[in-house]
Length: 153
Length: 255
Image (cartoon, rainbow over all chains, first blue to last red):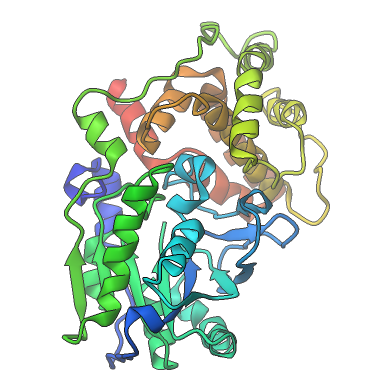
């Protein structure tokens, strides 16, 4: 799972019919080999530092996760109850694979890991995230990032 | 998720992403995506499976080097280890013997007593999990597990407790209390070795614990209170955020 066919009907219909934005363009950015890329993680799990303000319904803002943030300092303030949190409770990497990304960097499989990663809250109209996403893009580029891995929940 | 990818790519950053719901990704058409057959909430497949997580990570990052886009949508070929075990009948069961909830939980402070007994049985395992993982995901409510139980049970007793956090609405405080309660139960139950799925955890919590039954009892109470207090968040919480849709469906099917 999740194959939609495996889900019970109310979830199957809901998830299969969520309105999705359509875009007129198909931007496509290329870059150097993976071994030279600087990679940031962007999660929509509403991850945040314990001291941050929790995410609110209908806002498209983000929280910053410094790369050296200990896992114990991160909590999840996502509004939805319709996804599993027990995996996150057992291992941050199942949602935000910071340890795995660093292992790839140490092995030379990617160039480097960003200094900052970012989290949004899914269950939000992507249009509401646009301003924050474009602002975040500037911050990512200032950090030398050229590639982002986006992770839903 | 696809919208974010579009905005970032438009700003000059290459993106690749995990897709959990394939039809949504087909509709949004992000530049690069790897669909994975994993549970919602587990984009890397399974907790404490570093080799498997690394396999997923390599597959999704490899799309960044593909020259043949846009649009790329590939399928990851393997199920998560926990899902495979569940389908083969080797699924998870809670190893902790909890006292069975009384038949009539609503009488004489039944919920509070039953939850207190469960929490007493789970506390050792919660502490073990805390030591093993060096973390807990509880904390958004700002309350201890005892305070959380008192807060939730006050609603079940027909009272409106004082909001413990003035910066939030009462409904928001109740939402975080409920999330912390579930985290306590699941972190304790998952302390012993062995893979589990989110569905197995939820089936156990909502089907076999007094705390799960308390949340079902809270549903109409919170809904009525939302009308009385004109608390829009409380109404949304009661009807959409308190009990997972899949659990409601399964509970209805059992009746």
